Length: 289
Ligand code: FE2
Image 1: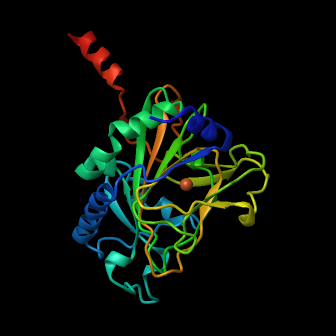
Image 2: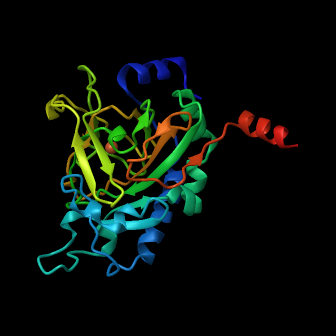
């Protein structure tokens, strides 16, 4: 699937952009499936918001128990001072997480497609397994900032193996808060680790004092609908707030290698979905015959 040049680029830069890897029709299928989930969602069932700035909500069972469920999380700016939604619920949801890849047919088919599996194998995950999926809305005007972070902070394995699959379901531009990644400069070791303790309290532990890259040095990934960005767990990245009047829908998968040790302190402990290679499936079948 990937060329030698592409895998080399990924190894050297920590990320790779696969322009319009998927069709507009495929993206529309995912968007429609997400919209259906939101249509069925009762906005009075929770006030859970998602933020990487404030971790107090992560003690909330609604978030911590969502690893094997499909749940909607609000934008921080979704409510007025009286706690009422400022706009239609369809424009108030930050994201849907975290088991779309297991529970919703359109996302399940996409996530378990040969294309996703082959890319994971080409990038070096010998036994790729999906831990999490998210549909991110980045709503017009209220889509919040996601500060600099590394995804291995949330999916820690020994050795570090997580790769993020970030799919542009809609065009992503600098105006609507596209992904921005570290470009050039020395890679920094894992800076933070998000820990979940047995009593379900959580901590974002700082592991060293090296600074995040300057915002000005980041490379904005202005990409068209259907483009897939893959990046490794140590690549610092962020996205600015969406101040435009266009949403920026994206679908993400976090995939690790089953041959590595998945930390028991990771917040998400739901059973992962193994992405089997055809030859592995065949050899497994022949072994059981
Ligand atoms: Fe991330």
